[in-house]
Length: 443
Picture: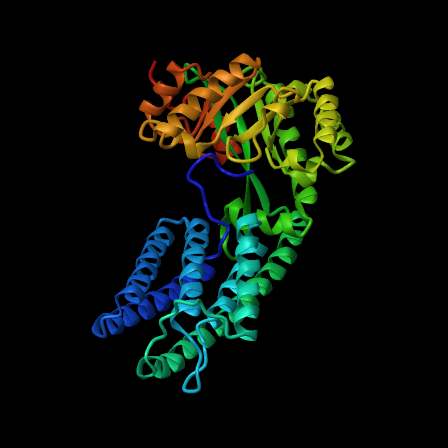
């Protein structure tokens, strides 16, 4: 249900702004201490502060590029290491000033928790656990390394006040952030429930073409016509739908609409050959009523089931591989095809791949976008194409945006393509109107 175009983050604009402000504050603090420590010629600690400042600046760059998830986890790891170093070597408590640097561990843990709720990550969970345990250890003891070189009290005393104020401010910001985001999530769930029953959702269609640029079908992509926010892309609401158990409700609506579209197409000789791909979430696919719902939707709309293709991500394989194989086999027996979406980005395993009745592999757009510049992406794209061919599967490259990408992939054996080069996602009437007139790639 997401686009085969540029990727989007699952973070709101407000959340991004708050993270940016917090990161600017950390960069400012790092620059302040870098100057102070350089003046007193405490070069080892100045180096650590310099690293933290550079990390913060790189994080700001990643945020501006829309790579917030990567920016957050990389900055957290760097910040954790520097705070740990300062606590054990430089911020040694004494009668003049207590240790305060460990307060930043609480900030790390709280930020990590907010991120974990929005986007599950094992690495993020590790950072949370380490930060929490580190805070407990340093708050409960005076542990220091044998070779510790504490800062002079003339620096530590005012520094303790400054670091405490910054840490408390960051903690307050985190609490505010939790309140804002969790309230937003609750409101979003209620709005999505209303959207299903008020027909605010709409399917857009992006063409899928063969090696000659001829349209062979389309992928159905979900949009939300919000009464106040306008057209909302799926990456802004589907993560919350997944977290709150709404994917089956929304996914079933998508399947029903897709079958209605196929019914219209199959009654027209000009479009009867088109296949329609529909994304299916792990929770929806594993629902015990899923197969029956798909078959009933096909029968209600009197469609040839071979026209429907279900696209699954590799995350569905984690839950219960035997159940997944059984469900796929059952659907395949009813002429309904399956494709493995975003191949190479998740839980890839040749062990399960050879057992799954999959008819198509989709090369993730993150590899296609730099297939001509990045040697690893080039090698991966070639290997996926050859792997699919050897296993008797078609291979579709998504996110194709340039003629050069198309030609490279086609020359290496890729047979199906999707991306802005061939057409952007558009409403059904526009897609139907442009059939046969889409800008086919040059042979």
